[in-house]
Length: 301
Ligand SMILES: [Fe+2]
Ligand SMILES: [Fe+2]
Image 1 (cartoon, rainbow, N blue to C red):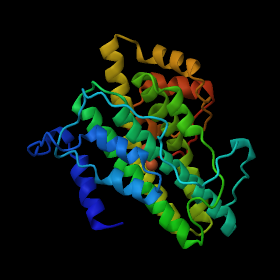
Image 2 (cartoon, rainbow, N blue to C red):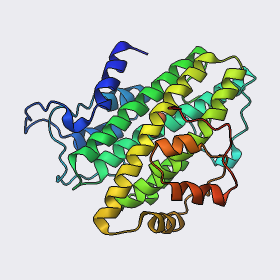
Image 3 (cartoon, protein in one colour):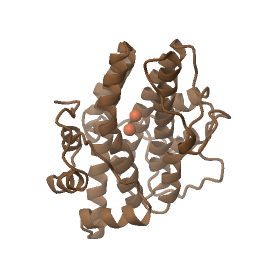
Image 4 (cartoon, rainbow, N blue to C red):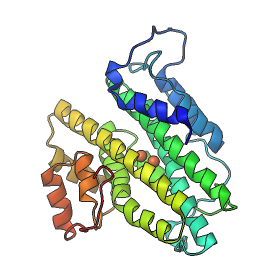
């Protein structure tokens, strides 16, 4: 990982609202229009670079601007081939091909996560500037995750696009495109949060297969993903307050309306707590599917 990446991360982990603001140039593209442009890019490396280049220390969010996208989003490369998830083969990290397929699946999740964060920033207007700062920070970190996984995949002799993949993440973005509350409830607080549960056993499998570099990358990803889910929780609760809604009742309604996947344990309770899920939410989750795994780890523990 390069030093500039670390510097950026230290910088963006301080409260964004306390960053020194540079004077804004009215002719400069807004943060939201830059997010839309990055979302349109099909080449994976160029998209990741564009997502990382959006600088929220200068310019303006464009929160009240009217932005529209056609059918050209998200920009995607011709491969990977998108298939029915049921047709994807299980991946065993003990073989080179199995490890390649597994790392490819993770890279695909991260590539989609760049689009999801950019879309959260571009699509929903009229929100506080900190909302856009938060999602553009997420887009930057997802772009880093994708880049780290792709580099490692290349080291194994494969590249992004070499294995088939599925389109489940973006399909949820489509289903929730009309309402920021539904989007935040079901993408960061459901799909990304599921990654908190899945990452530790996956990390251990890769380490057991002798891939210490993959395990290190998973550690970085898990640490950052707690922050992404925390951002989701922060804005979900803010939106519920603004609309006078009960967060827990509303979540159940939205999950049913938008056909959210049923979450199955074991759950990474420590990571979910760090990400801001309430005791009642965790109890409801664990109660739905038995106790949490005693070995589940939080990245900050
Ligand atoms: Fe990520
Ligand atoms: Fe994420």
